[in-house]
Length: 236
Length: 236
DNA sequence: CATATGATTTGACCAAGGTCAACAGGAGGG
DNA sequence: CCCTCCTGTTGACCTTGGTCAAATCATATG
Image 1 (cartoon, each protein chain N blue to C red):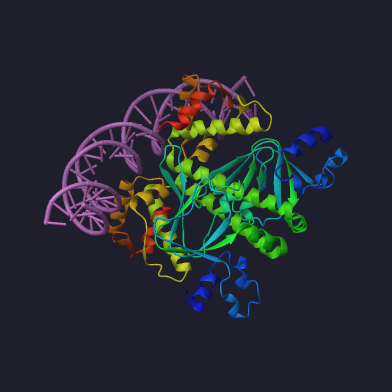
Image 2 (cartoon, rainbow over the protein chains, first blue to last red):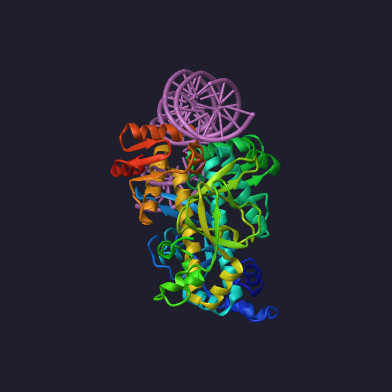
Protein backbone atom coordinates (compact mmCIF):
# COMPACT_ATOMS: atom_id res chain seq x y z
CA UNK A 1 0.00 0.00 0.00
CA UNK A 2 1.17 3.44 -0.85
CA UNK A 3 1.39 5.94 1.96
CA UNK A 4 -1.55 8.32 2.28
CA UNK A 5 0.75 11.31 1.89
CA UNK A 6 2.12 10.15 -1.45
CA UNK A 7 -1.32 9.17 -2.55
CA UNK A 8 -2.57 12.65 -1.84
CA UNK A 9 0.24 14.16 -3.91
CA UNK A 10 -0.35 11.90 -6.88
CA UNK A 11 -4.10 12.50 -6.78
CA UNK A 12 -3.60 16.26 -6.75
CA UNK A 13 -1.97 16.02 -10.19
CA UNK A 14 -4.53 13.60 -11.55
CA UNK A 15 -6.90 14.67 -14.30
CA UNK A 16 -9.52 12.22 -13.06
CA UNK A 17 -9.36 13.13 -9.37
CA UNK A 18 -12.91 14.42 -9.49
CA UNK A 19 -14.05 10.94 -10.31
CA UNK A 20 -12.62 9.44 -7.13
CA UNK A 21 -14.85 8.97 -4.12
CA UNK A 22 -11.80 9.95 -2.16
CA UNK A 23 -12.08 13.55 -3.21
CA UNK A 24 -15.83 13.76 -3.64
CA UNK A 25 -16.10 14.47 0.07
CA UNK A 26 -14.99 17.72 1.59
CA UNK A 27 -11.61 18.82 0.39
CA UNK A 28 -10.48 19.70 3.87
CA UNK A 29 -10.59 16.17 5.23
CA UNK A 30 -7.37 14.36 4.28
CA UNK A 31 -8.81 11.13 5.65
CA UNK A 32 -11.16 10.96 2.70
CA UNK A 33 -8.18 10.83 0.38
CA UNK A 34 -7.88 7.15 1.07
CA UNK A 35 -8.46 5.91 -2.45
CA UNK A 36 -11.74 4.14 -3.05
CA UNK A 37 -11.29 3.59 -6.75
CA UNK A 38 -9.88 0.38 -8.05
CA UNK A 39 -6.10 0.31 -8.38
CA UNK A 40 -4.27 -1.83 -10.82
CA UNK A 41 -0.59 -2.65 -11.05
CA UNK A 42 1.08 -3.51 -14.33
CA UNK A 43 4.37 -5.29 -14.94
CA UNK A 44 6.62 -4.00 -17.72
CA UNK A 45 5.17 -5.06 -21.07
CA UNK A 46 1.76 -5.84 -19.63
CA UNK A 47 -1.21 -4.48 -21.54
CA UNK A 48 -3.77 -2.29 -19.83
CA UNK A 49 -6.23 -2.81 -22.66
CA UNK A 50 -6.02 -4.14 -26.19
CA UNK A 51 -7.46 -3.09 -29.49
CA UNK A 52 -10.99 -4.28 -30.05
CA UNK A 53 -11.75 -4.75 -26.35
CA UNK A 54 -15.01 -3.23 -25.12
CA UNK A 55 -14.55 -0.06 -23.11
CA UNK A 56 -15.32 -0.78 -19.47
CA UNK A 57 -13.15 1.69 -17.60
CA UNK A 58 -11.17 4.82 -18.02
CA UNK A 59 -7.72 4.91 -16.50
CA UNK A 60 -5.56 7.51 -14.81
CA UNK A 61 -1.85 6.85 -14.56
CA UNK A 62 -0.60 7.03 -10.98
CA UNK A 63 2.96 5.90 -11.54
CA UNK A 64 5.07 4.57 -14.37
CA UNK A 65 5.15 5.06 -18.09
CA UNK A 66 2.84 3.66 -20.74
CA UNK A 67 2.49 3.86 -24.49
CA UNK A 68 -0.64 3.70 -26.62
CA UNK A 69 -0.33 2.19 -30.07
CA UNK A 70 -2.37 1.77 -33.19
CA UNK A 71 -1.97 -1.64 -34.79
CA UNK A 72 -1.59 -1.50 -38.55
CA UNK A 73 -3.24 -4.03 -40.87
CA UNK A 74 0.19 -5.46 -41.78
CA UNK A 75 0.90 -6.22 -38.14
CA UNK A 76 3.34 -3.60 -36.96
CA UNK A 77 2.44 -0.84 -34.59
CA UNK A 78 2.59 2.95 -34.61
CA UNK A 79 2.93 4.64 -31.26
CA UNK A 80 0.35 7.35 -30.73
CA UNK A 81 1.38 8.61 -27.32
CA UNK A 82 3.27 8.23 -24.08
CA UNK A 83 1.59 8.62 -20.75
CA UNK A 84 2.81 9.43 -17.28
CA UNK A 85 1.43 10.31 -13.90
CA UNK A 86 -1.85 12.17 -14.17
CA UNK A 87 -2.58 11.28 -17.79
CA UNK A 88 -5.88 9.70 -18.74
CA UNK A 89 -6.24 6.72 -21.06
CA UNK A 90 -9.18 5.31 -22.92
CA UNK A 91 -10.95 8.46 -24.09
CA UNK A 92 -10.67 7.51 -27.75
CA UNK A 93 -12.87 4.48 -27.06
CA UNK A 94 -15.95 6.36 -25.91
CA UNK A 95 -17.26 6.99 -29.41
CA UNK A 96 -17.40 3.37 -30.51
CA UNK A 97 -17.47 1.68 -27.11
CA UNK A 98 -14.45 -0.32 -28.19
CA UNK A 99 -10.77 0.49 -27.76
CA UNK A 100 -9.32 1.48 -31.15
CA UNK A 101 -5.81 1.38 -29.71
CA UNK A 102 -3.90 -0.59 -27.12
CA UNK A 103 -2.04 0.59 -24.04
CA UNK A 104 1.14 -1.10 -22.84
CA UNK A 105 3.12 -0.51 -19.67
CA UNK A 106 6.76 0.33 -20.41
CA UNK A 107 7.83 -0.19 -16.82
CA UNK A 108 6.15 -0.99 -13.55
CA UNK A 109 2.94 1.03 -13.52
CA UNK A 110 0.07 1.75 -11.27
CA UNK A 111 -3.20 3.06 -12.64
CA UNK A 112 -6.55 4.03 -11.17
CA UNK A 113 -9.50 2.44 -12.83
CA UNK A 114 -12.81 4.29 -13.12
CA UNK A 115 -15.62 2.15 -14.49
CA UNK A 116 -17.41 4.02 -17.26
CA UNK A 117 -20.83 3.49 -15.73
CA UNK A 118 -19.62 5.07 -12.51
CA UNK A 119 -18.12 7.95 -14.45
CA UNK A 120 -21.41 8.44 -16.29
CA UNK A 121 -23.32 8.45 -13.03
CA UNK A 122 -21.01 11.03 -11.53
CA UNK A 123 -21.24 13.26 -14.58
CA UNK A 124 -25.02 13.03 -14.65
CA UNK A 125 -25.16 13.99 -11.00
CA UNK A 126 -22.71 16.84 -11.05
CA UNK A 127 -22.58 19.22 -13.97
CA UNK A 128 -19.17 20.55 -12.96
CA UNK A 129 -17.69 17.07 -13.33
CA UNK A 130 -19.27 16.68 -16.75
CA UNK A 131 -17.85 20.04 -17.81
CA UNK A 132 -14.43 19.08 -16.55
CA UNK A 133 -14.58 15.83 -18.45
CA UNK A 134 -15.49 17.58 -21.69
CA UNK A 135 -12.46 19.79 -21.20
CA UNK A 136 -10.35 16.68 -20.82
CA UNK A 137 -11.66 15.28 -24.08
CA UNK A 138 -11.25 18.58 -25.88
CA UNK A 139 -7.69 18.89 -24.64
CA UNK A 140 -6.80 15.61 -26.29
CA UNK A 141 -8.27 16.84 -29.56
CA UNK A 142 -6.18 19.99 -29.39
CA UNK A 143 -3.05 18.00 -28.49
CA UNK A 144 -3.64 15.64 -31.39
CA UNK A 145 -3.77 18.70 -33.63
CA UNK A 146 -0.32 19.67 -32.44
CA UNK A 147 1.01 16.20 -33.19
CA UNK A 148 -0.49 16.35 -36.68
CA UNK A 149 1.23 19.65 -37.34
CA UNK A 150 4.52 18.32 -36.01
CA UNK A 151 4.42 15.15 -38.10
CA UNK A 152 3.44 16.95 -41.27
CA UNK A 153 5.79 19.87 -41.06
CA UNK A 154 8.93 19.12 -39.07
CA UNK A 155 12.34 17.68 -39.90
CA UNK A 156 13.90 14.78 -38.03
CA UNK A 157 15.94 17.11 -35.82
CA UNK A 158 12.93 19.22 -35.02
CA UNK A 159 10.90 16.16 -34.11
CA UNK A 160 13.53 14.69 -31.82
CA UNK A 161 14.23 18.05 -30.19
CA UNK A 162 10.52 18.59 -29.69
CA UNK A 163 10.16 15.11 -28.24
CA UNK A 164 12.92 15.68 -25.69
CA UNK A 165 11.60 19.09 -24.68
CA UNK A 166 8.07 17.75 -24.40
CA UNK A 167 9.15 14.92 -22.14
CA UNK A 168 11.27 17.26 -20.04
CA UNK A 169 8.37 19.64 -19.61
CA UNK A 170 5.98 16.87 -18.67
CA UNK A 171 8.32 15.49 -16.05
CA UNK A 172 8.92 18.99 -14.75
CA UNK A 173 5.20 19.69 -14.46
CA UNK A 174 4.97 16.64 -12.21
CA UNK A 175 7.69 17.96 -9.96
CA UNK A 176 10.64 16.03 -11.37
CA UNK A 177 13.85 17.34 -12.84
CA UNK A 178 13.41 18.95 -16.24
CA UNK A 179 17.04 18.21 -17.04
CA UNK A 180 17.47 14.55 -16.40
CA UNK A 181 15.15 11.64 -17.01
CA UNK A 182 14.89 8.19 -18.48
CA UNK A 183 13.31 7.59 -21.83
CA UNK A 184 11.80 4.23 -21.00
CA UNK A 185 11.73 3.66 -24.73
CA UNK A 186 13.77 1.91 -27.34
CA UNK A 187 14.99 3.95 -30.31
CA UNK A 188 12.53 2.00 -32.38
CA UNK A 189 9.63 3.12 -30.21
CA UNK A 190 10.73 6.73 -30.35
CA UNK A 191 10.95 6.40 -34.12
CA UNK A 192 7.50 4.90 -34.30
CA UNK A 193 6.16 7.82 -32.30
CA UNK A 194 7.93 10.45 -34.39
CA UNK A 195 7.48 8.87 -37.80
CA UNK A 196 11.19 8.14 -38.22
CA UNK A 197 13.34 5.02 -38.47
CA UNK A 198 15.26 3.97 -35.39
CA UNK A 199 18.55 4.63 -37.20
CA UNK A 200 17.55 8.23 -37.75
CA UNK A 201 16.58 8.59 -34.11
CA UNK A 202 19.91 7.14 -33.03
CA UNK A 203 21.86 9.39 -35.38
CA UNK A 204 19.95 12.46 -34.29
CA UNK A 205 20.47 11.74 -30.61
CA UNK A 206 24.18 11.15 -31.30
CA UNK A 207 24.29 14.47 -33.12
CA UNK A 208 22.67 16.31 -30.21
CA UNK A 209 25.13 14.60 -27.89
CA UNK A 210 28.07 15.64 -30.11
CA UNK A 211 26.80 19.23 -30.02
CA UNK A 212 26.78 18.90 -26.22
CA UNK A 213 23.12 19.84 -26.18
CA UNK A 214 22.35 16.62 -24.34
CA UNK A 215 24.30 13.84 -22.67
CA UNK A 216 22.89 10.47 -23.55
CA UNK A 217 23.73 7.16 -21.95
CA UNK A 218 21.56 4.39 -23.22
CA UNK A 219 18.07 5.48 -22.33
CA UNK A 220 19.10 8.02 -19.76
CA UNK A 221 19.09 11.64 -20.96
CA UNK A 222 20.48 14.77 -19.42
CA UNK A 223 19.65 18.01 -21.15
CA UNK A 224 22.66 20.31 -21.13
CA UNK A 225 21.31 23.12 -23.27
CA UNK A 226 17.58 23.68 -23.37
CA UNK A 227 18.04 26.83 -25.42
CA UNK A 228 19.89 25.04 -28.20
CA UNK A 229 17.18 22.39 -28.39
CA UNK A 230 14.52 25.05 -28.51
CA UNK A 231 16.36 26.69 -31.39
CA UNK A 232 16.67 23.36 -33.19
CA UNK A 233 12.91 22.98 -32.78
CA UNK A 234 12.18 26.33 -34.38
CA UNK A 235 14.68 26.70 -37.18
CA UNK A 236 14.20 25.02 -40.51
CA UNK B 1 -35.01 30.52 -46.75
CA UNK B 2 -34.34 26.86 -47.27
CA UNK B 3 -37.32 24.60 -47.81
CA UNK B 4 -38.47 22.64 -44.77
CA UNK B 5 -37.93 19.37 -46.61
CA UNK B 6 -34.29 20.08 -47.37
CA UNK B 7 -33.79 21.38 -43.88
CA UNK B 8 -35.11 18.17 -42.47
CA UNK B 9 -32.76 16.12 -44.61
CA UNK B 10 -29.71 18.15 -43.70
CA UNK B 11 -30.58 18.03 -40.00
CA UNK B 12 -30.98 14.26 -40.10
CA UNK B 13 -27.29 13.96 -41.02
CA UNK B 14 -26.14 16.53 -38.49
CA UNK B 15 -24.07 15.48 -35.52
CA UNK B 16 -25.48 18.35 -33.47
CA UNK B 17 -29.13 17.80 -34.31
CA UNK B 18 -29.87 16.95 -30.69
CA UNK B 19 -28.85 20.46 -29.75
CA UNK B 20 -31.47 22.09 -31.95
CA UNK B 21 -34.75 23.14 -30.42
CA UNK B 22 -36.24 21.91 -33.65
CA UNK B 23 -35.63 18.30 -32.72
CA UNK B 24 -35.98 18.58 -28.97
CA UNK B 25 -39.74 18.24 -29.35
CA UNK B 26 -41.42 15.02 -30.35
CA UNK B 27 -39.69 13.33 -33.24
CA UNK B 28 -42.97 12.63 -34.94
CA UNK B 29 -43.90 16.27 -35.52
CA UNK B 30 -42.15 17.51 -38.66
CA UNK B 31 -43.41 21.02 -38.02
CA UNK B 32 -40.95 21.32 -35.14
CA UNK B 33 -38.11 20.80 -37.58
CA UNK B 34 -38.26 24.43 -38.47
CA UNK B 35 -34.82 25.44 -37.32
CA UNK B 36 -34.65 27.57 -34.21
CA UNK B 37 -30.89 27.71 -33.92
CA UNK B 38 -28.96 30.59 -35.37
CA UNK B 39 -27.87 30.15 -38.96
CA UNK B 40 -24.89 31.81 -40.47
CA UNK B 41 -23.83 32.16 -44.08
CA UNK B 42 -20.21 32.46 -45.11
CA UNK B 43 -18.76 33.75 -48.36
CA UNK B 44 -15.77 31.90 -49.86
CA UNK B 45 -12.67 32.79 -47.86
CA UNK B 46 -14.65 34.13 -44.92
CA UNK B 47 -13.53 32.96 -41.50
CA UNK B 48 -15.96 31.27 -39.15
CA UNK B 49 -13.63 31.82 -36.22
CA UNK B 50 -9.99 32.73 -35.82
CA UNK B 51 -7.18 31.55 -33.65
CA UNK B 52 -7.19 33.11 -30.21
CA UNK B 53 -10.87 34.02 -30.30
CA UNK B 54 -12.89 33.07 -27.22
CA UNK B 55 -15.14 30.09 -27.75
CA UNK B 56 -18.74 31.26 -27.83
CA UNK B 57 -20.45 28.75 -30.07
CA UNK B 58 -20.05 25.36 -31.60
CA UNK B 59 -20.88 25.02 -35.27
CA UNK B 60 -22.41 22.36 -37.44
CA UNK B 61 -21.85 22.58 -41.17
CA UNK B 62 -25.13 22.60 -43.12
CA UNK B 63 -23.75 23.21 -46.58
CA UNK B 64 -20.43 23.98 -48.19
CA UNK B 65 -16.85 23.12 -47.46
CA UNK B 66 -14.54 24.51 -44.78
CA UNK B 67 -10.98 23.98 -43.65
CA UNK B 68 -9.50 24.29 -40.17
CA UNK B 69 -5.90 25.42 -39.92
CA UNK B 70 -3.20 25.76 -37.32
CA UNK B 71 -1.13 28.90 -37.71
CA UNK B 72 2.58 28.34 -37.29
CA UNK B 73 4.84 30.78 -35.47
CA UNK B 74 6.55 31.66 -38.76
CA UNK B 75 3.25 32.71 -40.27
CA UNK B 76 2.25 29.95 -42.64
CA UNK B 77 -0.58 27.59 -41.98
CA UNK B 78 -1.03 23.84 -41.74
CA UNK B 79 -4.42 22.48 -42.61
CA UNK B 80 -5.77 20.17 -39.94
CA UNK B 81 -9.03 19.14 -41.51
CA UNK B 82 -11.77 19.62 -44.07
CA UNK B 83 -15.39 19.76 -43.09
CA UNK B 84 -18.62 19.18 -44.92
CA UNK B 85 -22.30 18.81 -44.18
CA UNK B 86 -22.91 17.35 -40.75
CA UNK B 87 -19.42 17.95 -39.36
CA UNK B 88 -18.92 19.82 -36.10
CA UNK B 89 -16.38 22.58 -35.59
CA UNK B 90 -14.96 24.14 -32.46
CA UNK B 91 -14.57 21.13 -30.20
CA UNK B 92 -10.83 21.66 -29.80
CA UNK B 93 -11.54 25.00 -28.10
CA UNK B 94 -13.51 23.63 -25.16
CA UNK B 95 -10.44 22.83 -23.09
CA UNK B 96 -8.93 26.31 -23.10
CA UNK B 97 -12.05 28.33 -23.90
CA UNK B 98 -10.16 29.82 -26.83
CA UNK B 99 -9.96 28.60 -30.41
CA UNK B 100 -6.50 27.09 -31.02
CA UNK B 101 -7.21 26.90 -34.75
CA UNK B 102 -9.10 28.89 -37.34
CA UNK B 103 -11.89 27.80 -39.66
CA UNK B 104 -12.24 29.21 -43.17
CA UNK B 105 -15.02 28.70 -45.71
CA UNK B 106 -13.68 27.34 -49.01
CA UNK B 107 -16.89 28.11 -50.83
CA UNK B 108 -20.30 29.45 -49.95
CA UNK B 109 -21.21 27.83 -46.64
CA UNK B 110 -24.05 27.69 -44.24
CA UNK B 111 -23.53 26.66 -40.64
CA UNK B 112 -25.73 26.25 -37.58
CA UNK B 113 -24.47 28.02 -34.51
CA UNK B 114 -25.08 26.57 -31.07
CA UNK B 115 -24.01 28.91 -28.27
CA UNK B 116 -21.91 27.01 -25.76
CA UNK B 117 -24.00 28.12 -22.80
CA UNK B 118 -27.08 26.74 -24.48
CA UNK B 119 -25.27 23.50 -25.25
CA UNK B 120 -24.20 23.26 -21.61
CA UNK B 121 -27.74 23.81 -20.43
CA UNK B 122 -29.07 21.13 -22.73
CA UNK B 123 -26.42 18.65 -21.62
CA UNK B 124 -27.08 19.36 -17.96
CA UNK B 125 -30.77 18.80 -18.50
CA UNK B 126 -30.58 15.69 -20.59
CA UNK B 127 -28.03 13.01 -19.84
CA UNK B 128 -28.52 11.38 -23.22
CA UNK B 129 -27.42 14.57 -24.96
CA UNK B 130 -24.35 14.81 -22.75
CA UNK B 131 -23.46 11.21 -23.57
CA UNK B 132 -23.93 11.85 -27.26
CA UNK B 133 -21.69 14.89 -27.06
CA UNK B 134 -18.94 12.94 -25.33
CA UNK B 135 -19.11 10.44 -28.15
CA UNK B 136 -18.68 13.27 -30.60
CA UNK B 137 -15.58 14.48 -28.80
CA UNK B 138 -14.17 10.99 -28.50
CA UNK B 139 -14.74 10.37 -32.18
CA UNK B 140 -12.54 13.32 -33.04
CA UNK B 141 -9.79 11.96 -30.81
CA UNK B 142 -9.95 8.62 -32.56
CA UNK B 143 -9.96 10.27 -35.99
CA UNK B 144 -6.96 12.37 -35.06
CA UNK B 145 -5.18 9.14 -34.16
CA UNK B 146 -5.81 7.87 -37.66
CA UNK B 147 -4.39 11.06 -39.15
CA UNK B 148 -1.29 10.75 -36.96
CA UNK B 149 -0.72 7.21 -38.15
CA UNK B 150 -1.22 8.26 -41.77
CA UNK B 151 1.20 11.18 -41.56
CA UNK B 152 3.88 9.21 -39.76
CA UNK B 153 3.77 6.06 -41.81
CA UNK B 154 2.56 6.63 -45.35
CA UNK B 155 4.21 7.55 -48.65
CA UNK B 156 3.05 10.42 -50.84
CA UNK B 157 1.03 8.11 -53.07
CA UNK B 158 -0.61 6.47 -50.11
CA UNK B 159 -1.53 9.83 -48.63
CA UNK B 160 -3.05 11.19 -51.80
CA UNK B 161 -4.92 7.94 -52.49
CA UNK B 162 -6.21 7.93 -48.93
CA UNK B 163 -7.25 11.55 -49.22
CA UNK B 164 -9.27 10.92 -52.38
CA UNK B 165 -10.93 7.82 -50.97
CA UNK B 166 -11.73 9.59 -47.73
CA UNK B 167 -13.36 12.50 -49.53
CA UNK B 168 -15.28 10.13 -51.81
CA UNK B 169 -16.57 8.20 -48.82
CA UNK B 170 -17.61 11.30 -46.96
CA UNK B 171 -19.52 12.65 -49.94
CA UNK B 172 -21.10 9.25 -50.45
CA UNK B 173 -22.18 9.05 -46.81
CA UNK B 174 -24.04 12.32 -47.35
CA UNK B 175 -25.86 10.92 -50.34
CA UNK B 176 -23.67 12.33 -53.10
CA UNK B 177 -21.78 10.51 -55.80
CA UNK B 178 -18.76 8.59 -54.50
CA UNK B 179 -17.19 8.81 -57.96
CA UNK B 180 -17.25 12.45 -58.85
CA UNK B 181 -16.76 15.54 -56.76
CA UNK B 182 -14.95 18.83 -56.55
CA UNK B 183 -11.92 19.26 -54.37
CA UNK B 184 -12.60 22.85 -53.41
CA UNK B 185 -8.91 23.05 -52.63
CA UNK B 186 -5.74 24.26 -54.23
CA UNK B 187 -2.88 21.78 -54.58
CA UNK B 188 -1.11 23.78 -51.94
CA UNK B 189 -3.94 23.26 -49.47
CA UNK B 190 -4.03 19.54 -50.17
CA UNK B 191 -0.29 19.45 -49.62
CA UNK B 192 -0.60 21.34 -46.37
CA UNK B 193 -3.17 18.81 -45.20
CA UNK B 194 -1.12 15.78 -46.24
CA UNK B 195 2.31 17.03 -45.23
CA UNK B 196 3.53 17.26 -48.83
CA UNK B 197 4.60 20.07 -51.15
CA UNK B 198 2.13 21.22 -53.78
CA UNK B 199 4.45 19.97 -56.52
CA UNK B 200 4.32 16.46 -55.11
CA UNK B 201 0.53 16.62 -54.89
CA UNK B 202 0.34 17.76 -58.49
CA UNK B 203 2.72 15.06 -59.68
CA UNK B 204 0.90 12.35 -57.77
CA UNK B 205 -2.49 13.39 -59.11
CA UNK B 206 -1.02 13.45 -62.61
CA UNK B 207 0.35 9.98 -62.02
CA UNK B 208 -3.02 8.66 -60.86
CA UNK B 209 -4.57 10.27 -63.92
CA UNK B 210 -1.98 8.68 -66.22
CA UNK B 211 -2.76 5.31 -64.64
CA UNK B 212 -6.41 6.01 -65.45
CA UNK B 213 -7.31 5.53 -61.80
CA UNK B 214 -8.83 8.98 -61.76
CA UNK B 215 -9.74 11.67 -64.26
CA UNK B 216 -8.74 15.07 -63.05
CA UNK B 217 -9.70 18.40 -64.54
CA UNK B 218 -8.53 21.27 -62.43
CA UNK B 219 -10.24 20.73 -59.10
CA UNK B 220 -12.85 18.34 -60.38
CA UNK B 221 -12.14 14.66 -59.78
CA UNK B 222 -13.75 11.57 -61.13
CA UNK B 223 -12.65 8.28 -59.65
CA UNK B 224 -12.36 5.66 -62.37
CA UNK B 225 -10.91 2.81 -60.35
CA UNK B 226 -11.60 2.68 -56.64
CA UNK B 227 -9.91 -0.67 -56.34
CA UNK B 228 -6.61 0.58 -57.73
CA UNK B 229 -6.64 3.50 -55.32
CA UNK B 230 -7.38 1.19 -52.43
CA UNK B 231 -4.40 -0.95 -53.46
CA UNK B 232 -2.19 2.11 -53.71
CA UNK B 233 -3.26 3.00 -50.19
CA UNK B 234 -2.25 -0.38 -48.81
CA UNK B 235 0.90 -1.34 -50.63
CA UNK B 236 4.29 0.04 -49.69
C1' DC C 1 30.07 -19.74 -18.75
C1' DA C 2 28.38 -20.09 -23.53
C1' DT C 3 25.12 -18.75 -26.46
C1' DA C 4 21.26 -16.45 -28.35
C1' DT C 5 18.65 -12.38 -28.79
C1' DG C 6 17.74 -7.74 -29.13
C1' DA C 7 19.22 -2.76 -28.70
C1' DT C 8 22.30 0.53 -30.40
C1' DT C 9 25.64 2.79 -33.22
C1' DT C 10 27.79 3.84 -37.43
C1' DG C 11 28.90 3.59 -42.30
C1' DA C 12 27.75 3.34 -47.27
C1' DC C 13 24.42 3.87 -50.49
C1' DC C 14 19.92 4.99 -52.49
C1' DA C 15 15.43 6.94 -53.45
C1' DA C 16 11.42 9.63 -52.25
C1' DG C 17 10.25 13.78 -52.09
C1' DG C 18 11.71 18.70 -51.53
C1' DT C 19 13.71 22.79 -53.98
C1' DC C 20 14.36 25.70 -57.75
C1' DA C 21 12.98 27.08 -62.15
C1' DA C 22 10.41 27.66 -66.41
C1' DC C 23 6.10 27.91 -68.54
C1' DA C 24 1.03 27.80 -69.47
C1' DG C 25 -3.64 28.92 -68.50
C1' DG C 26 -7.28 31.85 -66.12
C1' DA C 27 -9.15 35.59 -63.49
C1' DG C 28 -9.37 40.18 -62.44
C1' DG C 29 -8.22 45.09 -62.94
C1' DG C 30 -6.77 49.18 -65.25
C1' DC D 1 -6.37 44.59 -74.65
C1' DC D 2 -2.46 44.41 -71.60
C1' DC D 3 -0.66 43.37 -67.40
C1' DT D 4 -0.36 41.07 -63.14
C1' DC D 5 -1.19 37.59 -60.00
C1' DC D 6 -2.30 33.06 -58.85
C1' DT D 7 -2.73 28.22 -59.80
C1' DG D 8 -1.08 24.29 -61.83
C1' DT D 9 2.22 21.31 -64.47
C1' DT D 10 6.55 19.62 -65.49
C1' DG D 11 11.62 19.20 -65.59
C1' DA D 12 16.29 19.13 -63.42
C1' DC D 13 18.71 18.63 -59.47
C1' DC D 14 19.78 17.92 -54.56
C1' DT D 15 18.93 16.86 -49.62
C1' DT D 16 16.95 14.30 -46.08
C1' DG D 17 16.13 10.47 -44.30
C1' DG D 18 15.32 5.52 -45.43
C1' DT D 19 17.66 0.93 -46.49
C1' DC D 20 21.06 -2.42 -45.97
C1' DA D 21 24.87 -4.09 -43.54
C1' DA D 22 28.34 -4.81 -39.98
C1' DA D 23 30.11 -4.40 -35.42
C1' DT D 24 29.42 -3.66 -30.39
C1' DC D 25 27.15 -4.19 -26.23
C1' DA D 26 23.78 -5.72 -22.90
C1' DT D 27 20.67 -9.02 -21.28
C1' DA D 28 18.67 -13.31 -20.76
C1' DT D 29 18.64 -18.16 -20.89
C1' DG D 30 20.29 -22.84 -21.04
